[in-house]
Image 1 (cartoon, rainbow, N blue to C red):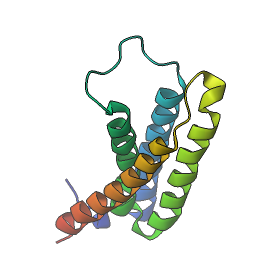
Image 2: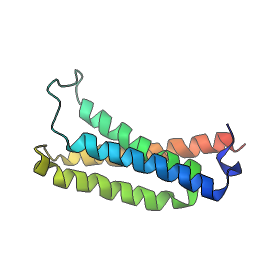
Image 3: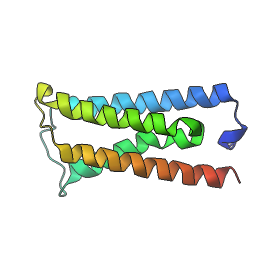
Length: 122
């Protein structure tokens, strides 16, 4: 695999955009559809899912668009808040604890992305 810094800016931007938009669409769908009939079998699974999904959403940015991380982090936080605000419209419960785990996921994803970028760019 070619280190991210060796890819052209246009290529990095296209890859980043495809991954980030794809993940955002998946997160929106999964957080707004009615709950599945069979609950997940471990405590606080939904919080883990929120953290992991927002970490995945943030992860590509430090690798492919490192100068935009703060803008993407702010947009991801707004996205998480918007989801919580509109979930009752879709028959879901709005929980600000979910938003807190979204924020934690943004932080974890950014840190992990920067760690991987540092390793790849050695």
